[in-house]
Image (cartoon, rainbow, N blue to C red; front, side, top):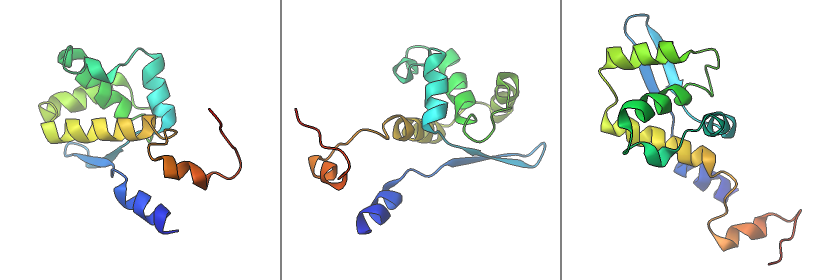
Amino acid sequence: MSDNITNLQDRVKPAYIIDNKTGTTYELDFSRESVKFAETRGFKPDELTEFPVTRIPELFFYAFRKNYKNMTRTQTNDLLERMGGLTTNLLERLMQLYNQAALTHLIVDPEEKIKNAEVTVEL
């Protein structure tokens, strides 16, 4: 039980954006489904620094996917334009959230694999 609590405390929390024009608060986060959605459309996080003009708005759009599936790219582009762009802190948080969702099935600590008593893996 204490491992679960530690994992929850280590979890990166979603980012929130308030659209002052409409008063709407948006919770930006990623799930495995939203990461898959981004990947199937050719999004590659390592291209953020190579192609920031196109990739940053893409990441922003995909951050809405988990909670707002009907949000269009035009709507997120308009919101991003009104925001004047992303702060480095928000960009960093979105990348942390993306990576957190993308790597949910990765076991980093070999001791953690002991927790899974249903399946044994031998290499």
